[in-house]
Length: 300
Image (cartoon, rainbow, N blue to C red):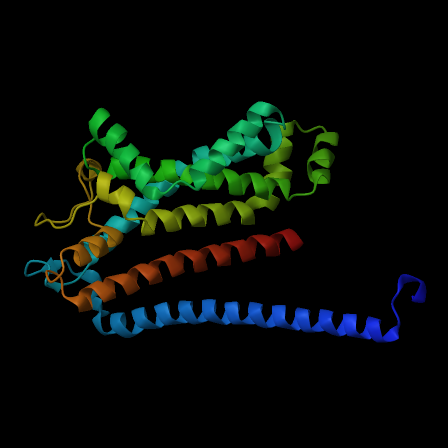
């Protein structure tokens, strides 16, 4: 080391500086992590403290009363369930097939690269843009009006890019030998994908569908512009005519509750916020259970 101009003292000093720098960086990371955790705990804690007093069976199972100043939020819960269910019926058919095409059929040419870039851009596009598109095309141009169907189409359009990208990543994470082995046994490429590759990619595909469901339940702007209903005195029904009518839902109820301050008691707003949070949590827990079972089957 003497030839490099470094003696033992210099080496020791250099090592000490590196250790101090590494320790300082670790402390900074720890502080950032603690701040992030503290913010999350603070948000969840605030919602729990202010929302729990409003939660009871009547609140969850009854319609609003006395001009939205009393009663429950059942129409909003039902509307959110309908919006999510319709989105999950439409999105997988296009999103999963599109992800399979990107992963196994598109290749790596210039056109597929442009398509992937466009899909990634759409996946990151703010939801208000989809809401305005749905308003212009589905509500006004196609004359669907503010309706459940218009909400389904808008939310599905918003969710498809996410499902396509997660499906592509899930399929690419499966070892190529799965596909090669199945093809070598005489299966066509599609048969090999369906029987050997897709079962192993199911956990990743479910992740994409959960993200889509979470956006369908939690996004307010697209619903506000295409399917949202703030208040109705009509009796709740579930028939074919429901498709052509707007629906009350949790995000829109929250947005309007704060925009029209004083109309809805703050206790009901916080209770609605907690209900929405628990709704999304249940969706994620269900997905975790399904993914765990699928992985357990794959191990066997």
